Image (cartoon, rainbow, N blue to C red; front, side, top):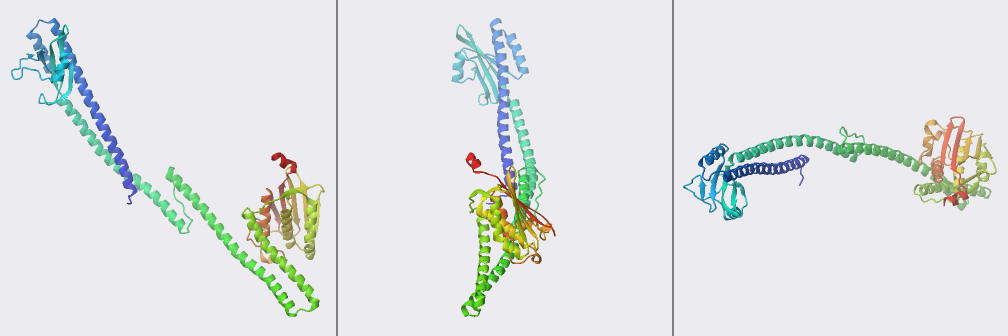
Length: 477
């Protein structure tokens, strides 16, 4: 069953209030009654002791003495009765009831020389009274005693009046509680409703929400966290949309790129099979088929490498690699492609400079960056430099090409990024995945890669990979 928050809050407040006032009323009433009764008993006991003390020094039967006490106690609304050892009333003379009204247990206590007190009695005397009976002992035997009675009707009226005031207080407090619960619940319900509406907007795909949090309590903190979550979701959603757009564009570009070599391979294969290509041209056709097949393999391998890196499936086998030797290997691989565009590759590194890296992945990093430099450089130069400092091996790859637009520098690392088609050709994989792999591989080596460029003056990639020798690794273990 659904119970509104207002009623939950109201029931909790009212329940606590009623319970508190009931306990307070019971405890307070009990305290007041006990206080009144104990005070009255102490007063009666004091007068009784005084009467018994005076009896021992006065002449027996001194009516003047007894009358004086009667007048004194009447002024305080107290009655006293003197009785003998058999319970007969000696003073004042009571024709209607010549025996004192004590129970067997009370008379047994009196006979034993013990004081009897009754805080509250209504049955024996027709009204609410407090009584005290004091024995008068001589030689260990009961001679008589004194019984003092005091009506407590006025005291009970005071207690009843206090209870009425407590009841009025309960009603006033209940009214205030209902009003306070209404105000608090409306405020809380409004804030919760704001959160629900915001959650509904997010579930419908609208992340432009801002829940106000003017109160820094738990709900205010929840609203603040909710706004932070919405902002992050909005950023994530925008990033997803950007990636999705790049993915679609990438799929379209790769599909087109794959279709071209496949069409070439298929056409040449059909031509050779059907004898449509002259013998003199067959070797050239086979070379073209081989080139296009390698191009397809490269595109597929780049995507597979990226997925391995992204899913942490790529394992590195690090070793100390002589940097100039690695430069020479890369130069041998790419020199023909560079010469086709009129470029020269220059190597600058000391013989003793080494880098602690995975050999295959280091070559992959260098090849991808240099291919990118070749792609955007015509009739220029490409420099490979290597050096060491106290912490890192620094590799610089600089070209004299057309450079990169400052607005595009951060975007070149994105997986689906593709440069402006007017500035690219289709020779070396301009789809951007190569540089994305480069950055991932450098980070796997705990390194850092940066790029600086100026349009029309070239681009420089700087890679820093931490130095780590075998001896250092052994010491760390």
